Length: 135
Image 1 (cartoon, one colour):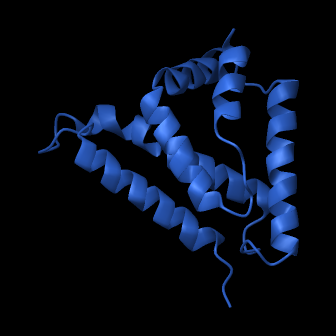
Image 2 (cartoon, helix red, strand yellow; image 1 turned 90 degrees about the horizontal axis):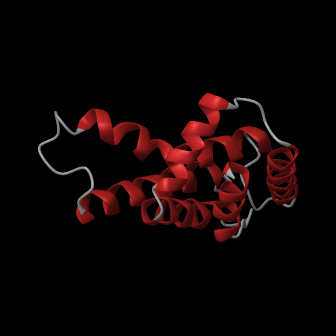
């Protein structure tokens, strides 16, 4: 069940190795629209910390696409493709690990439309900075 739901979540956002900032923004939007996906992912990591064959295949396809984009000079090659994909995914998911802890100390609602928009923009900008080729 968990694998099926996570597969559907992964299929919702098409992966474009040449537009990782766009992918990051779309993943963030999808996770905000479907917070159950992050809860399931967290639960899966607690209960079954290993990877499935499907997860390996999905991650391999992404890293292979990033490696090809790096070889073509379309994506910054400083970070290896595995690290780059990991960073992109981690940045898109960071909001969910922070919002629970920041709620009591925050002066504004962590889930406000304005706060989410600022965080999304920061995620996209950070991904743009680490993926745009330096010339």
